[in-house]
Amino acid sequence: MLIVESLALSLLSLQSFHWLDRLRHNSDRMNIEVVETIKDIPAAQWDALSSGLPGAVFVSHAYLNALHETGCAIAKTGWQPQFLLARDDEDHLVGALPLYLKAHSYGEYVFDWSWANAFEQAGGDYYPKLLCAVPFTPCTGPRALSPQVEVRIALIDAARTLATNMGVSSLHALFPDATETALWRDARLLIRQGVQFHWINQDFTSFDAMLAAMTHDKRKRIKQDRRYVAEAGVMWRTQRGDTIDDDDLAFFYHCYEHTYAAHGSTPYLSLAFFKTIVRNCTDAIVLFIGERNGQRLCSSMCIVDGDSLYGRYWGTMEPVKSLHFEACYYQPLAWCIEHRIARFEGGAQGAHKLARGLLPTATYSAHWIANQSFANAVENFLKRETAGVEHTLDELSESSPFKATL
Image (cartoon, rainbow, N blue to C red; front, side, top):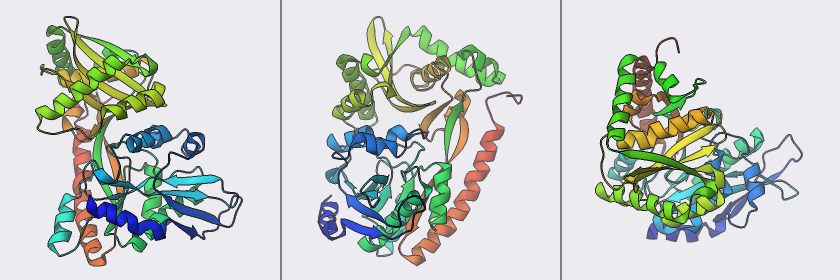
């Protein structure tokens, strides 16, 4: 952490620079600056940059500022904000890019630990690095924020220029959407492919209608999962936005923290963070609470944005067979069907999700490595890895839980 704090001091001379790209809209000059906080930027101006895009909630002013103001993503935790802001000649905010100086690779969900080890064994310092991402959030969405593609291109180029000027080992962008991934590729960053599991609503009228569209063995497995939970006496209720009271939220966090502890770990996020997003993101937060004999047993939290629901956090006070599947998949999927939500992202990893109705989906990240020899090695590695990932996607797709007619 001391490394990050000392490097942050050295950035004082790099707090702003001019990007002389010519824009077609209303100006032939744009100023791009580096800022360490977004709290003073009007939320409406910031949020207008990604309005209407899938996954925009995670780059919203409320969500990002909550990560910073509650101390979850700050220099002391290895996340030094170095956000890029683009302004036109009239000082209007026309673009932004969430960027962090990172002292480690925790909380990213695109794993480059082996790269770091190889680089350091060769005598280099992999950390700090620059990272364009939403901390602790493996959800696909916009990263270079602007309705104007010229500004997004300029922001991406500016991020690479900043990485070069700072002398960091590398620049990474995690989980950009497919359209933006093409822009990072055009900027000559290496593209890495991953796999997640997402559910698509095929106009299902009920959970049973979804089951009817599935193959016999997958339908049987889900019914079995749900029977175990029902026979354990677990009943469910759902709270959203301002209907989530402090008591239910405190219980959710207790479960969340308890489940981390049961696995010998501690959570990245604090109760203060969850209180803040429930207060400031209002209807985006959906809380599922499982109760048994009138006592709360478990809870999961999802985030809704437009026509998409994102499975994010969960915890339980006591292990019950198949409870995780019910809390994290079946309850959210039933909610999606009831509210006509088009898709559900189930989070990072987990081939077991395929049997629960979620389909394999490609995700992307972009990577720039300063050392050319190491960049060549990473590029060769990615060629082999991508071939393996594409083969895995093909194999998983052949094991779809849905009937071939769907």
